Image (cartoon, rainbow, N blue to C red):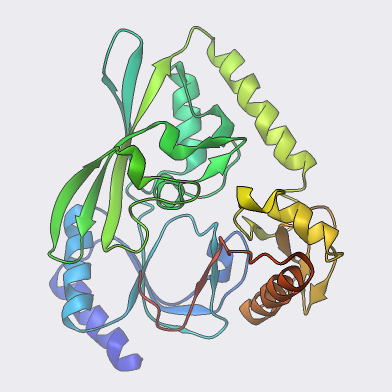
Length: 318
């Protein structure tokens, strides 16, 4: 690992990598779950060219890497991640482009947080993304997961996305095609396309900024009422499946699992589809709890729950 770190340092010096580059970076503090060990290397490229250079380097040296957004849906390994974690948080520009008399396109970098995007829309009198107020994480992460909040998917407003293809190191644009999207499914999953930015098709609002902010606050308050911010977590652990007849949280509750604990990870007493970190929980704790839930639900209900959270292993890529 030290040899790899030396190679990264030499790369940074020779390529004038001008922004954040740190070694043995604690990852727990960067995630909403507050779980994980250190990353051997943590990098925040400042612009597209820096991103391309570091990707070219790690691929040529066969160094494993992981592209990180807001880290709101991931659980990092407990030991050292022996590769490079590349954050896109500096890709956060937001702007408006005219589309029609009633609509606009909002161009947004993948590293912008959902809070930044929603606030921008409120200040510019734009409607369409209010239900995502209070959603942690970045725009790129929400698009990758096709995040869904209060019966609305992010793809409902999606217009197009800019991406970098790791297969051939080219850039491209992906336009909205309905068949490529589904509940918690996007065309970026299981692909080598890194989301750089996206455009959303939004409506011009007749409401004042104060009215839009107040409307957004209703969704934030509902999240608080449901306990979203009581403890560190990654939100919903399992996807909902309409074929099961009930949301995953209700199914887990019906199996009598709410409150079950493994180490310092616990199925939230207030929400069956949340696993919370009571303090010092590990990835191992969460994995064991997930395994217990899956097995118990399959035994009692005859259905197989599918995880939504992503476990980052020691040398996992992307």
